[in-house]
Image (cartoon, rainbow, N blue to C red):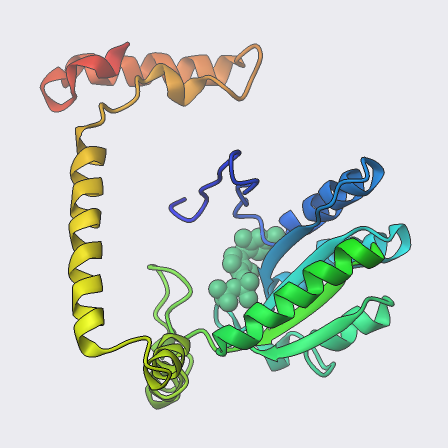
Length: 254
Ligand SMILES: Cc1ncc(C[n+]2csc(CCOP(=O)(O)OP(=O)(O)O)c2C)c(N)n1
C-alpha cells in the first residue's frame, strides 16, 4: 500500500496492513541490538487501535522482562477507524498500560511538535543508556478519514473535526512558534512552497518515465517453488495480456 515504504539504508522497516504486527518485530530487533551491544534502539509507531491487540501486550511484556531498548510510540487519536476510544478501553488511555508492565511511560501533547521531539529524544537516551523499553502516548485527534474508503462524518460531528483541524493543527501551531521567533514569514513560506512544488513535479516526471516492471515480478519473490494455483493465475494473466496486447506496454509480457 502507498504508506508501506521502507529503506534498508535508513533502517526503516516496512510495516504490514495487519495492525500492530510491527510491535513484536521492533521488540525482537531491539533485543538483537542488545545482544550485539549496539549503541542503538528501535522505535515503533502504532495507533490506539494497535494497543487493543494481543501483539501490543505480548510486545510490551517481553520487552520489559528482557530489558530491550525499544520505544513504543502510540498515537492515541481517539479513533480506530469508526471505533471510539471509549469502546476500546476503560483505562486512563494507553500510558497506564506501560506502567502496568513496569515500563517507563510518558504522555505528551501529540499536536506539539517540540514536546514530541523532546519526549522522543529523552526516551532514546533512556532506552540506550538504561537498556529499557519506554512508552510514549501522544494525545491527538485523527482530523482526516482513516483511509480513502472511510467517510468519518458518518460517525462523528463535522464541527468536532473542524475544531481539531483548525485551532489544534500541529503544523499551524509550530508555524506560529517559528514565526514568533522570527524564523518564518509569509515570504519565506511562499518561496519554500514554490521550491517544493518544483521538486515534486520533477520527481513525478522522473517516476512516470520509469518502465513498469515485468509481469514475472508479480509471481516471484514469495515462493521458492510456486504452487500450482499461482502458476495457473500467471498463465491466465499472460493469456489475457496476449488477447489485449494493445492495452499493455510492450515489456509487460516478459
Ligand atoms: C489484525 C488486524 N485486525 C483488524 C484490522 C482492520 N483494521 C485496519 S485499520 C484498523 C484500526 C486501526 O486503528 P488505529 O491504529 O487507531 O488507526 P487510525 O484509525 O487512527 O488510523 C483496523 C481494525 C487489521 N488491519 N489488522
